[in-house]
Amino acid sequence: MTRLALVIFSIASVTFMGMAIVVALVIGQDTLVPIVTAAAIGLVLSLPASWLVARQIA
Image (cartoon, rainbow, N blue to C red):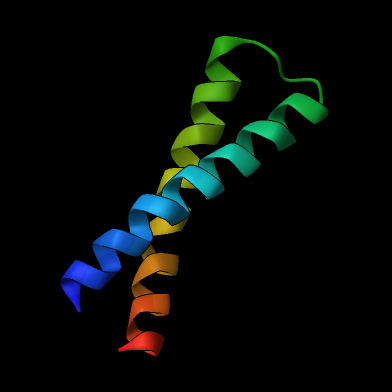
C-alpha cells in the first residue's frame, strides 16, 4: 500500500499545491512568501489525502 500511496502522492501533491497557489494569487497575495507558504500547505494536505485514497483503493 505504501507504493500506491507514493504514486498517488506524486499526483496529488502537484494538484494540491497548484490549487493552493492559484487561491493565493486570486486573493491578491503575489509575493514570494505567500506563494511558497501556499505550496507548502498544499504539500502537507496531500499527504493524508494520498494515504486515504490509497487505503480506499487497496
